[in-house]
Amino acid sequence: MLEKFTSLLDISRLQRLMDTLYEATGIPSAIIDKDLTILTATGWQDICVNFHRIHPETLNKCKESDSYIAENVHVAPCTKYRCENGMLDYACPIIVEDEHLATLFIGQFFFEPPQEEFFRQQARKYEFDEEKYISALRKVPVISEERVSHIIEFFLELSKFIADMGLRNFKQLEMVTFLEALMNAIPNPIFYKDVKGIYQGCNNAFAEFIGIPQEKIIGSSVYDLSPRPLATKYEAMDEELFNNPHVQIYEYEAIDAHGQKREMIFNKAPYLDLDQQVAGLVGVMVDITQKKELEIALKNSETKYRALFNNLFDGFVYFESVLDDKNSVVDYQILEVNVAFEKLTGLNKGELVGRRMSEAVFTPQHITLNWLSMFNDISSSGEPKTLEYFSTLLKKWFLVSAYSSQPGYCAIIVSDITEQKEKIERAQHYAYHDPLTGLPNRRLFGDRLALSIAQGKREDGKIAVVFLDLDKFKDVNDTLGHEGGDILLKEVAQRLVACIRDGDTASRLGGDEFVLILPNLKEWDEADQIVTRILEECRRPFHIKQHVVEITTSIGVSFFPQDGDDVTSLTRNADIAMYLCKEQGRNGICYSNKCMFSSKP
Image 1 (cartoon, helix red, strand yellow):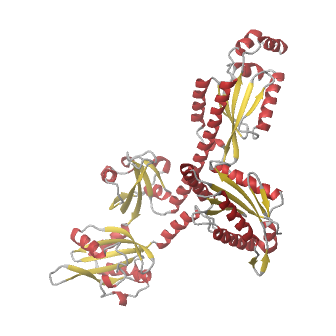
Image 2: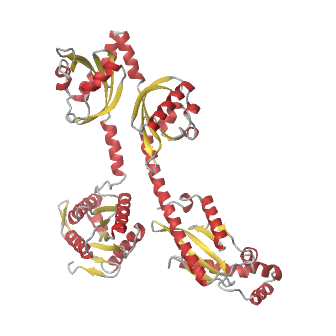
């Protein structure tokens, strides 16, 4: 169910657009939502506002016109009506995802000059001020029927344009809501800025970390949120990223909500606009204060080091360089590991200590990370590095912070982030797939159909959209319960996938409704063969919970381009064909121009 029309578009901007159109065409217009609330109104004539809608009898005629239009607005793309008060009215429905959300009204004009005597009689009959009434009449535009037909065609396209704008805004709103929920589910502070360094948004963790509400963060710069020395560093790093787009990882300080200094890892990456130009950056902060404190503790006290080392939640490994005859570093040997690292890897300390890095967990299965080169860089430069690493041996993701306390020695702190990675992957998967069957959901179906249509328009291709509904599915639920119904839906999904070609899409919209996209058809008969095979496959018995279940299915098919050239019209016409099949007996296939039914039960 879509939101109200007012939640999809900026009504004030829409009003300005309609005002401009009135200045260009001279035809009054209005947009009214499904609750009959007037959203925009432009150019309404004085004769209607100050006369016809004032007197009870002429007002009643206006209401009759309104009622007629409301009852017939769904019949055609545009409904015409001549009001008993003498003027013409038109109405165009604004349909978004098959839902009538608003109506575009145009009217209050004549095809030919009005007969003033008729309106003078009206004025005397209803006791209007005759001269003022006739003066208002003469302001009503007279437009030829031929020109009106062109204007109506324009307004029809305008209503489609407004509907498309509303749908795009709705989809964007859905995606923004999803991304906001995803960001707020991540415990690390996340923020994003534009290329001017102005914050465009953040998650709850970031707002809590700095102690400033999100609404005050948005629109601010680093100089508004941080002390100047820190802000200068942040700005310089941002500029370096904008000038040389890449994934940027560095350590620096930050001040938390309590005024305390925290050691952080900043992980930043640029994001691009539609023209593939850098539009801003996204940043993730990781608090490594505790890890830094551990480094200091290791330097100051062996006792403290041992206590922290053995009780650290993250894994810790300490290495010493191995030299060849020419005094060059050829490997690193493990000197110490803590209990947490043993738990992370499943290897005990005795198996690890004394072994070389090239023999242990860090052996590269793929040349994606050269541990030896990285340790040599850290040891020579003294600069720490942080990275995400997937161990093909352990099948786990790790966040690795590597540093060198002195030349010839290196250490790493390892955190298992496998679960966090899997949660993100699952969230991304379930955003576009049905959790029961694993098939693409309505969102992914819409995206793929839009792409298929775009390709079809470029290549003069043929596409079939197939709606499929299981007949009397409720009986299965009533007999075998919802668990049995779910098993049936999953088995139907498997059969559908087996029936279609590579490159086709089988998706589940919900309940027992499935929809297929069959792009790149060589001939229309190719779609007939596929849907006939599906009809037959669904008729084969299903074995569910020691019961034999026999069902049939009703199928509706629409074709691109003859049944529609956009997502809405193709899906609507396939849905209509499917319901026509149900009305005419089920267990068959209906197209826009014919139905075929199986001779088998």
